[in-house]
Amino acid sequence: MRNPSINLTPAEHDVVTAAVVATEANTDGEIVTIVAERSDGYSDVATGWAAFAAFLTLSALVVWPECLPGLIDRATGAWASKWTTRDHLVLALVAATSAFAAIILIQLLRSVRYALVPGTIRSDRVRNRASDLFKVGAERRTLERTGVLIYLSMREHRAEIVADSSIADKVAPDVWGEAMAAMLAEVREGRTGDGIAKAVTLVGAVLAEHFPKTAADSNEIPDRLIEL
Image (cartoon, rainbow, N blue to C red; front, side, top):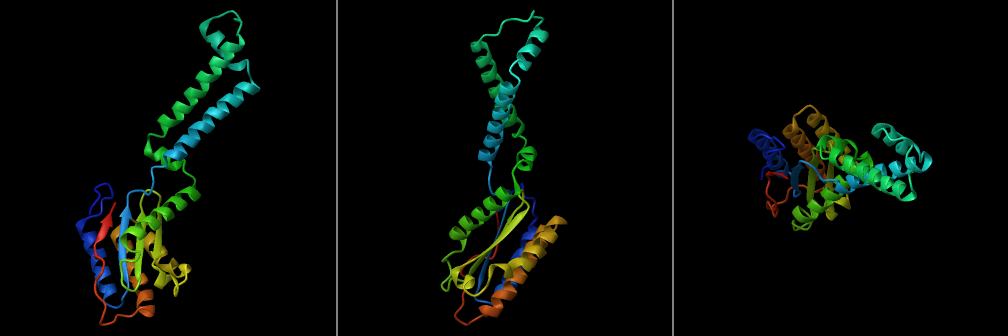
């Protein structure tokens, strides 16, 4: 499965597949590799920023109630026209709505939208997406519960490694840190396929230690890299 926006070449797919095949030759563990263009659209975050801009606009009108009416009078050439309470309310509504719409429109530019997403929210969304994909693609799909998902989210510049219960009982989550660091170092240099392959190899070394290859093992999950 390929996503043209990720721009991984067939050769890079082959590198990852070869790494998975070689790794699984030494362990009963099964490795699933997924790379996604993004983990979320962050429409709620965009709406939140727009609402915040509208709130700031209303707050400014409360602190400086005559500032905007004065600017409008000067721009229109009016002679200190009398602004009624209704006029002020209409002005506040128009100003707040305009601020909301402007921030929404600006965030239609993906580069701006993602730049405005706090890092903690990015990390949480990537972690949640990886967990969801693991449940679909790896959890309980192996007889001995030995599936591992290596997930890379390109837009967020983040990755996750999620292990099935049998592995999680024996391997602490921080053990995967070396594999994560090796993968991201290669990805930063534009070698995404090599990065995922390195992570596969390092994860495989841990799996081989705790779940060595047995005669009863079979290939229960496809070895190919999945693009979303």
